[in-house]
Length: 263
Image (cartoon, rainbow, N blue to C red; front, side, top):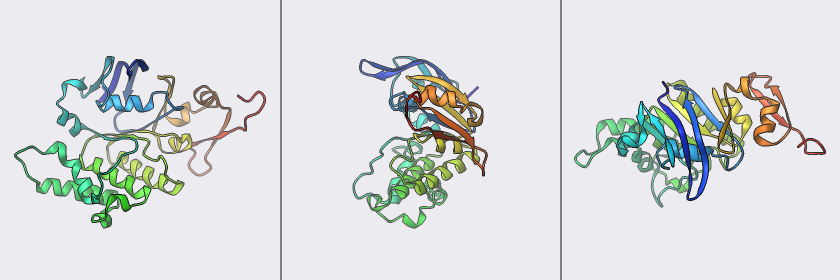
């Protein structure tokens, strides 16, 4: 059984339903990337899996039971979330922000421990930001800030990590920097779920791809197995060619220019 799954999940905002009766299992130990057009339910699904958005019906199952039955801190010990557009408190340093990832492991009676210090140091080392520890977060580049936020999630030491559009607004070099790090986390035994807009980045890094449209899962599986011209047209509404990357063999999507009969 998957550690994280959705069963008959219906969720949305106010009177607008985004997901309806969704069933989905996140494969353990994989880098799952969710792709799809804007407003198809990707972020809604991620927020639901992090228990930030209560379902209208159905449930999210975490380690065998409804996620709503777990205490809040216990969820935070099991699932780490990097939301969209994270904003750091003004004037906070890198080290202080990363240290906030230790909150789920602390109590009113416990102080800062050697284990907390070790977890923060390891997270900063893994994300290559140790030299930035004393810098203010708002002074950093976009790629550096994303590494700091990921370090905070790593400091939680959760086996499951959810990343909502971790490469948005980053240039190509910083996108590769962040996704190389995410791939490393998976190779070290974490289960990672990421929402990405760039389908070729998804195909390059995902070991498991989920394609969504209109609140439903259209296809899922290894990118090389499911990423076809028909799927791209069905999900994104564009015609494209799919060719193998000459270096890695991963599928590459080449959109065709719009014209008569191509959409």
